[in-house]
Image 1 (cartoon, rainbow, N blue to C red):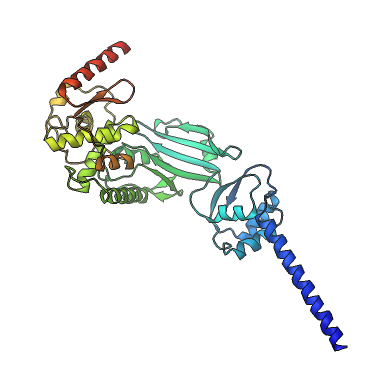
Image 2 (cartoon, rainbow, N blue to C red):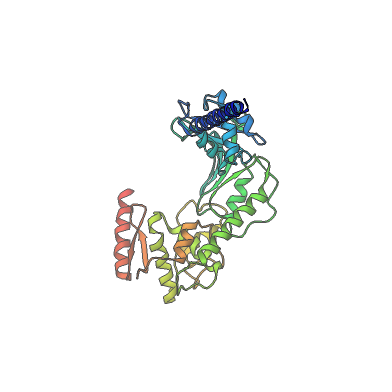
Length: 382
C-alpha cells in the first residue's frame, strides 16, 4: 500500500514539475516573442510610476498580451526597480522584453512633445515639436521668437501639456552675452544670471531641462560640459602646437568657429592660423575685428569699414600680434578639436570661394588671384 502511495506521489510530483517547466517555457516565449502592438505608440511614464502600474497601462493600450507576465519578466531580469520617467517610442511588434529594455535603459525621451528654445548666432526661436510615432520624426507645431513680442494664441495651452519636455539648444559660435540675454525670454526657466560667463566657457549643445530650473544652474551645466570637452581634447592634442595652454586653445577654436562655413574645412582653417602663428604672422581675421566693435553683444549687420580694420582693439588681429586676449565666441567641440589637431598643410591664406567655403593659398600671389575671383563673383551677384 505504501509503495502505491509513494509511486502515486512521485508521479504527481513529476507531473507538477513538468507542468511548471512547461509554464515557464510558455511564459518565456510570451515575454520574448513578438508583441501584439500593430502601430507604434508613444508611451508616457510618469515620475514615481511602478512596473505594476505600467504593465496594466501597456495591456490597456494593446502593447502586451499579459500584464502579469510583463511584471514577472521585469522582476526575473532584475529590472522591476529601474523604471525611468519619460516618453518612449514603442515600435510595432515590440516584445515585452524589448519594452522593459526601452523603459529602463535611461537616456533622453524618444517621443512626445518637446519645446526647444534654440539660441542662434543671429536670433533665438522657440520651437514646439511632436514626434510622429509612425515615422519617429519630429513634426513642427509652431515656432516663434519670444523676444519679438508676438506669441501665438495657442502657445499657453500647448506650453502646459503634461507630457511636454523642455530643451535649450545653443548653436556653435554664439557669444556668452547672447546666451544670457536670450535666456531671459525662456519663460520655463527661473531666476537671473548674476555674472556674465567668460567668453568661450559655454558648450554649444542641447540641454534637457525641467520647468522652473534656475538659469544660473543651466549656465553652470554649460560651463561644466565645455570644461570637460576642453580637458578631454587638450589631453589628445597634436605635438608642437604654437599654443601652450587650454585657454589659448579655446581662443583659437573660437576664431576657427567664426571663420568656418563648411564643417569639413575646420581642419584646414585651423591649419592656416597655426601656420601663421608658427611664422610670427598676424592672423588678420575679420571676426576678431567684429568682436572688437560689438563685444559680442549683437551681430554687426553690415560690412566691416576700413576704419574698423585699422582701429586698435584688444581683439583686432590686423593690428595685434598673436592671439587676442579672450575667445570671441563659444566654440563647439569640432572647432576645439580642429584647433588642437589641425590638418597638416602649408596654407597661409584663405578667402571665400562663393560656395560657402574657402579657397586656400600657400603664397600671397595665389591668394591675390583667389581674392580677384571672389570679387568677380561678388560683382556678378549685384
